[in-house]
Image (cartoon, rainbow, N blue to C red; front, side, top):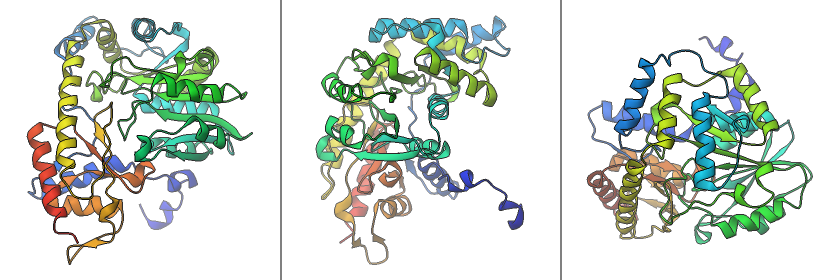
Amino acid sequence: MSLELSTMLSDKIQAMSESATIKMAQKARELAAKGVKVISLSLGEPDFDTPQHIKDAAVEGLAKGFTKYTPVSGLAELKKAIVGKFKRENGLDYTEKEIVVSTGAKQSIANVVLSLVNPGDEVIIFAPYWVSYLEIVKFAGGIPVIISGSIDQDFKVSAQQVADAITDKTKLIMFSSPCNPTGSLFSAEELDAIAQVVLQHDNIIVMSDEIYEHINFVGAHASIAQVPGMKDITALINGFSKGYSMTGWRLGYMAAPQWLAAACDKVQGQITSGAASFSQYAAALALDGIQKPTHDMVAAFESRKKLVLSLLSQIPGVKVNNPQGAFYVFPDISAYFGTSNGDLSINNADDFCEIMLSEAHVGCVSGSAFGDDNCIRISYAASEENLKTAIESLHQTLLTFK
């Protein structure tokens, strides 16, 4: 494309940032293609295979003829299974008309934002936040209002912070629990306190991203929709990529009041239509079938988390909390800002990640992409051997910076 034609790109596209997680993974692949052994701890993808019984279900679906277009909002079989999951696991009663299945939770989030946000509407986003929240809100013309929880707060915002951020322009509140990138999760008591603030206002919707619901190390999952009065003003986002290691299947779903679900159905009908039929057929069995593979995966993640925290605690200057969900740690590495090894200098988290990739051959993601410039995100969706090797390499490389 010539320079002249490239200027035809829309203002929205030119203002949109590239996904930092995908960008760092690409840089790691490019280095690996040159023969450098790189350990990438940058992508949010379980390193476990999809359980065999789910793969078998997809084959069964193909054999039964599930190869055609699906209803925009999802196969009846899957929507029924999702309704059952919410009732069984969360004590929430939804109808199938309140469920919209999408090609990944990211599309579900975009559907909600595009259905609700007008130019100039304010959207409160809890930071650290998943990278796409900000860009999706900006794309819709909304004004992101960021409120932050520090590492000393376990990266969780308080109800008072939410109250202070709400204005007469607030339309939507967005957050994840368990959180990407921090792994922190809100307790039922913390969510109740936030809900009581929201319930004092009219015309505010909450989007609760619960894609990591099944990867938590404290027991029962708490959802803000469980607080009395909140279900009718909450859009719950979930999916299959994390808890069932089905990233390539591209399946997410949303539960919301019927008026919002219908709007999301309308948006999706004009952009992608329904998700793949045989993927949906298999996903219904994932929800209704045996859960042992998920439980085994979570146990492995918890073991890895303990290993990573132990190894990081041995690196001088690195500060880390103890996350209770997902498969990330979000250490504060700001003690290394202003240091140099004589040739290279670390001035911020972006520098830190670039240098660790080039010098330690370890891929991680700068916290600047998630709304916290002092931190980096490390995914422990990798083997214990690779985790040990990668963090030791980080340690040895950082010893050269003074």
